[in-house]
Length: 153
Image (cartoon, rainbow, N blue to C red; front, side, top):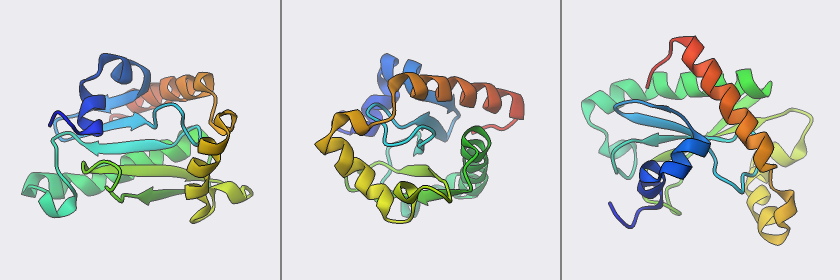
């Protein structure tokens, strides 16, 4: 779909080079593009254009749980977070992309609905975003951990 921002990111070679961690036949795992609210904020996208779980094929429905689990374990392993929030709204882009957000117990900015404020803060002050260098480092760590894990999408 030409007008879909998620589909565009899947096709764009620079986006893939900078943020993509793994690509399988059904799912794409990538880091949130710059400006990223937090280092380790990953996105698990449906590879084909679909609006949400109600549009899954039987194969996608069966594969979704393991993909979410493995991607969440990766976020925790790389960031050392206490929990991983999984949030999908689909209003900004009508293409299934699950936000996997590291939650650190001692950091109020990453607690519950406060994660939405991270976007507002970045809009008001671009310096509040995670550093692009830290994001690139995280992507490399994720790629290495993913490839050594034996997991697949």
